[in-house]
Image 1 (tube, rainbow, N blue to C red):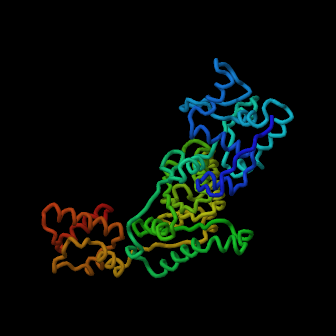
Image 2: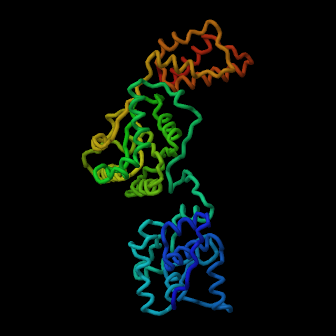
Image 3: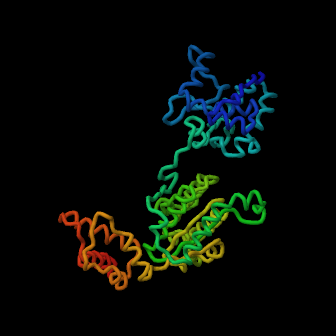
Length: 409
């Protein structure tokens, strides 16, 4: 059985699939392999209709391969399906076609396609042919949607409507943040055009540390907003597992999904998982240390920007500290910085009475940015409730004391 001439999308075709085929310079056999994986996403009963032409009365067709999905009612292609379509039942032709499924094959090398693992003793090509979900989405819809938070992707997409002007930080911190922007802007030139990928480790690793509410999360989000990068905050409660090997598996899934996406990965309260390794007293310590070592390895391999946030630098494992490209301390705001935050925080709809002394409040109370926004929300809601949008000094002071009492201050 010979391979028929496969139509190549015309030059004028602008679909994502056509562009991909032209870019990858797909051979006829490879194109048939890819189309076999895509077909069920377009026509549910595609392979069933082909089988019916051979067996109109029904019956088994083992040479054709194929399996039924858990939810999908139609036939899904296996390696055997593609092998039959290309080489029929001729043993010599089938053997010559086998390299198409090897790791050197374009689609398998780039993880566009994979083969489902089969039980020991069964032919490996009887496994289902799996098309990467992102490629199935872009081939059928022309775009890739952002992944949603799930057990398979333990990260939340975060955005903000705030601007750099809303963030109040010391000049030294601003300088270090601009360095991160510079890395994002010039990374491709440095690594690719200048050939430094042979000498420098991929990616950029930075530690944000400092008290809660000092702008670590907002800084990460604004970096994404102003550089056109998506930011994902990793949900550590979904990453960490009490079962041996599951934490590594969850993180592997995360980093595999993020590879080559130019996403910013933000690990909040990172010391919960990137903390200091301990002395090995039992099997639990041994596997906990292995988790930290695995994380260190994956972060060093990641080609994008990875931000780890912690309240205390000393909580982080020394091996991570040595490998950070940058370490940025977010200090509690000083009185003059607290005053700037207070001046920016109130909406235009409220009016501050003449007795309001914001400089005195800023000087007397150790407030962070998040403290101040909680205070503003409290006093604004009270103003709306009473129908009087004029705020007094006592109104704001009551909100401040309420906020500080939450932390026992």
